[in-house]
Image (cartoon, rainbow, N blue to C red; front, side):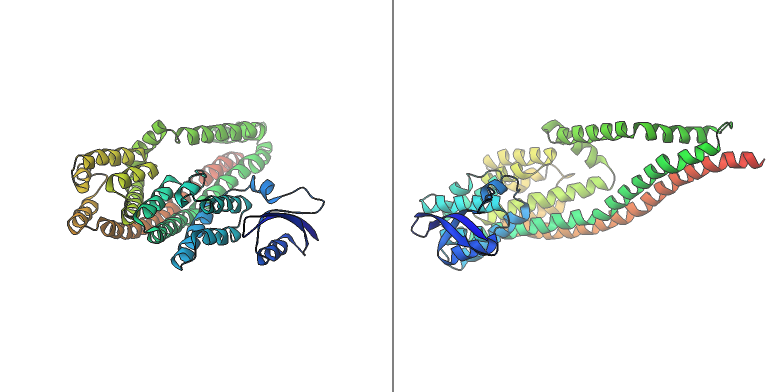
Amino acid sequence: MKFNYQAKSKEGEMRKGSIEAPDKESAVSSLQKKGLYVIDIEEEGKGFSLQEIAIFERVGKKDIVLFFRQLSIMFSAGIPIVEALKAAAEQADTGRFQKQITEVAKKVEEGNSLSDALEEFPETFSPFCLGIIKSGETSGKLSQSLDYLADHLERNFNFNKKVTSSLVYPAFVVIVFIGVLFFIAMFVIPQLGEMFEGMELPILTQVVLGISEWLLNFWWLLFGLLFLLVASLWQFFKTKAGRGMFDKIIFRTPLLGDFFKKLNLVSVAENLSTLLASDLPVVQAIDKTAGIITSETYKKMILDTKEEVKKGKPLSENFLKYPDFFPPLFTQMIVVGERTGRIDKSLENVVNFYQKEIDRRLTELVKLLEPIMIIFLGFFVALLIISILMPIYQLQI
């Protein structure tokens, strides 16, 4: 196969040409061995380039975690930041992310700081990441800051993945349960209804047959309304008022309220610990933490804490005003951190403790969901069986 390419040499000179290779990956690899950095490559006769493909690709959290881990390792090993960025770009899984890292490397090579270059892509690199890198550049500890950032993103990614994977089974059971009910209502019950035609049926049987007939004729309307409802709620809960309402509901719900509070505590402690460890001033660290937290309730309390810290009050003092949301263990660990001058380490211990608590609580919730779902399934199946057996019993009488 023949590929046309556009590349840049180490000296920054643009080059165009063609190369024979069995596939695109081999062509890119051959050009890189020649000291060329590929900007665009396409098979001759086809108009599909990396840039065009990249439009439809999404940069995932895993991509960002791997990027900062690679950058941290290479930079710590003494590899210049530009070379480290180019190497990370070569290992990027998506064309879109590869293009972004390439642009970052180009800007750094032109004399821009790493944080300024990354700031050009706000949809990929969050203010949190930029804040840590900027702090490392200011303090001259960029290598250390990259380590903190890579560790934080990795822990956060693995923790979120663990929580999500724990909920896969209950979600699967619910979907199967709903699917079975729809199947029975739309295909089994209508056939049974023909057997009872002309009979005087019990109320329960009439209701079940009526629901089944309605679903058979208007299933599209039900799915349409459900889709609109879910989409509307999704958009509403993205707003400030929606997040506030979600907090009021979820924090007052038994079991779930305590679970979501612990999730927020882990998020606050993890982000604040990482920012403080990277030598970011306390006020800035609190401000950036507030920007990351999705809970509107916790966001307000953290912003209130920021104003109190500005006045010279200790960080722990304001958290003590909210015992329902910041338990004694959390505040006492901050007090210890303030006395020793290592708040970041104290918060790290808090994160480890509450992550174990969340794991335990998540296991309990999943175990509790199983009998609840079985009871619901048994209830609906019992209703269907009773509604069918009642007219059959009347026939026998």
